[in-house]
Image: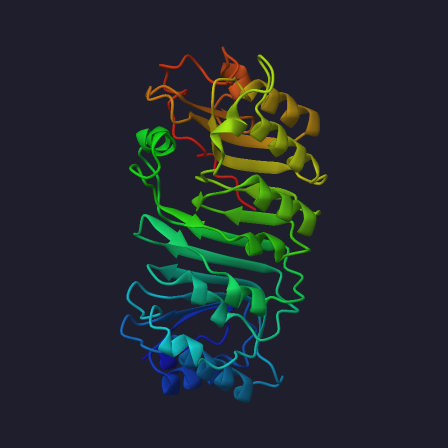
Length: 360
């Protein structure tokens, strides 16, 4: 039935198909080969046990049925279902190289191993400019091994990279409690490895959602590798900071951590938008300096602070956003203290941290 519909839709420029098995996938690819498609979405049945061979068959059908040798897509979306068995490494490690060209690639996964998602990348990434992972996970923590990704994107010119999690963090209380005792109040985060911040020399837009154990070192590696970065978006990100580095250097001043953070951000001379996620703080009031820095640099800044382990007061989380959603006042307009937020009991002061939603 799907192939019959595709044969009739000769004028379609955007197509979504479901691959059921390699044989069917090859026939579907052959039908679409002669079309001028601007956007293709490939999905799988939940019973599919070997998604990459099916995609390889789709591409081979596309190649054999078309005029050019290598299938080329302006935009390709690969969607893996909730129980698509991607977790079984048997089907991934022995997977063939995928020969195709794409400019904009999105790989959507639900509760699967994101380490293996790079196996869906083309064997030659010369044309690839935008790469996005969409991840849904139900674990408290996820350690991302970027080894396969490192191998697949060697010599890349990717300008936009994103790992976007659809797992919301709606409980405001969890931010403060996580920093108070991370071993007890765990949150759903992805630990991004140092190597990930050294992969993209042409990067302009970076989105890493729900990060855990973010550090100044990782930010320094990013500044070294991607000096042309314009958008740094780290929503719902928690930082790993030594408590000694949160002590203010002088009365009323910033801590060593905050000083190093701003110094590293200053190395990114083309930076225009930044969401730093959720920062810990000790006893100082950092938002005034961050607000001044953002104004001086002309940067759209979104950031939240939560008190460190010595404090258990519900009100000790604060947000600053100098570019809120339409209709909302800026933190500068509603500020009555150094945090850039309303009175601590107000609705504005207790809104969910890092919810500005800046995106590349």
